[in-house]
Every structure is written in C-alpha cells, then in structure tokens.
Length: 81
Image (cartoon, rainbow, N blue to C red):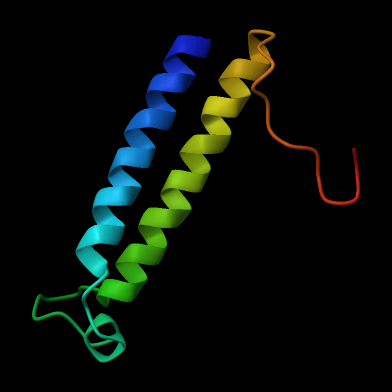
C-alpha cells in the first residue's frame, strides 16, 4: 500500500500543479464570474472544490499508509504531538 499512496501523491501533485498553472493568469473578476454553462459554478468555486478533493484523497492515502504500518500517516491534530 505505501507504493500506492506514493503514486496517489504524485498524481494529485501533478493535477494540482496543472490546475494552478491554468488559473494563474485568470483575473479575480473572471475567476468569480459565472461560466456560460447551465447550472455551473464559477471557476473559483471549481478550483476550491479541486483543492478540497485533493485534500480528501491525500487523507485517504495517509489512511492507507497508516493501515499498513507505514510511517507516512497523517500529521497529529493541531496542539498535539
């Protein structure tokens, strides 16, 4: 499982870097303007969702490592060490 978790991390990082590169040159006005698609969110909301999804899957990968005894588990909660 640690190999799978590492693979997830690499893929998520690649997706995040590509997404950030796409959003880098878009103005705040354009990021927050509605898209010309029915029932769609703004680009900012979609980017926020992408980040939230990556965070979720990062935690899932950490849980896979933790379940297999790998040292790559989630960090302790704030205020704990």
